[in-house]
Length: 196
Image (cartoon, rainbow, N blue to C red; front, side):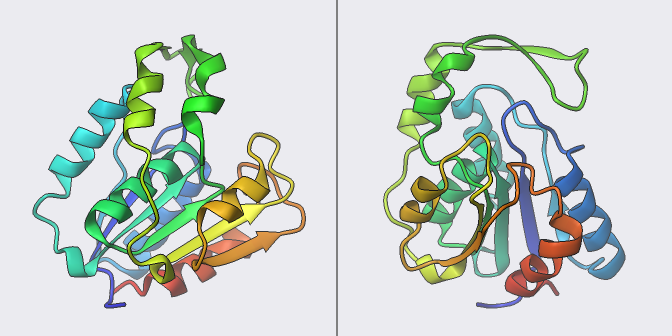
């Protein structure tokens, strides 16, 4: 893998660029790798609109030196980006079957980090998620998945099975948020990404 000059970070469902992991990575990249172009957008509720925005935003990025990090639903989106561009990906407890898992969340939702902010998760978004389901990664060796057996929302065997041939860091405990991200996982993610 070449060194990473452009890094995309994708947050999860009901989350935002203000999530703990996004903020930790943003601070570290700004302080230690100021030459890296960092983009952590607020994703719209519509999966189709989210992917259209992302692909437009990275259209002019150098595919040979870009990478993507995604958490939960952002990991599902990151997988799609990696399948489309061939770029390296780091997946943090990635959603594997969001069309199935998010069907029960249709309706009014609030943001985790700003409960006063509401959005409506429409039934049609399930079909949009299905349309984004991707096949095997073209370069599975360019993928690192950090998977917690203690994830209270997603099934770890499904996450592991989704990424054959990729580097898997399987945690015996942990939680969906990877609450120990900064102390236990950040350095490994950065080492994998080889930021300039």
